[in-house]
Image (cartoon, rainbow, N blue to C red):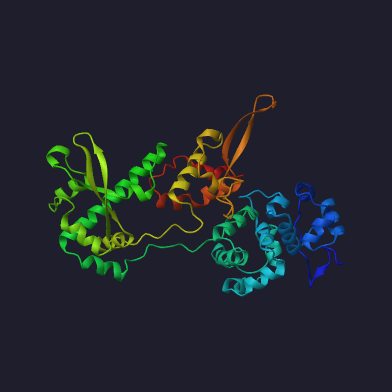
Length: 429
């Protein structure tokens, strides 16, 4: 039988250190003997003994067999926490050798340009300098991220994060920037098909939608309850009662100022609904002056928003790039970053955000690991006798992510308070 140190072609088989005690503990937990595990994994009992003694490291294929036999994840055997994966972790989770990865990458234009080989993939994974032209050019290495993501079967952002963890002392690969795009002809045609009154209605509804979005952001900052977007995007248009008693909604006041207000729901909004630019719903609300009253709600559709932007001369806003956080998650990360170096108190960060940016978390059973940007760090009592409290701190990758993309986030989410974050760049370890 060939050992892990035999040669595969001209390259040694890639090694991945597993934690022997973790392997043994998982086997015992399942009530398996070494012989039983060996049978499940398709290896000899002698190899299981060698693995548990730390005398051999399994190949990617063998590690995949062990993981399947034990019903766990690769990280359970290697000790890698969720949100802390390196490039070699991603490759082993995919069950690929260095040569297999190199072959897959050479099928891409970027892989051919970089002349990818097994030895270069090995150097990349181990943080060593990679020989060859363009390997120090972030614009070129950035084009390798998508082929790597396809090879490993993971999102591009996981590859970028793993790359930055593995190679923390060099510039991050640069993903292609999504530029603002000109309005589509379809959106512009939809706008031009409207009469002047309908255009004013659609434009004011979009502006009210934006104002409401800002209000929801302010509520998050103040840690107030924020309803789901599917709820708050339904904007109150009118209440079915006399305005002399209940007044006008904010949207009605907007339309009144433009001189185009229709009483009730109005034929204008129904015309916009027929074109697929709005959705109209009704519900009942309690009003202090008249009790229960019917309410008409309008929600601008994606098509309606595109038409309004086209007509008002606004470029289409691209979605945030795959490696960037949503405004909500960026706000959470910024709060932790602002609290550096002391960290954020443990009870100041909770909820769903941890499943996306907290070390050791994962959204759901089959979901992707979190990005590992923040971690709960113990703060020892004076004298080091015990843990006094835990605080949320940026991980090294979290700090680097903030420094690397701070200017981009400021342009994307100008409402997020980032005061004081510029000093992080000078504090990078």
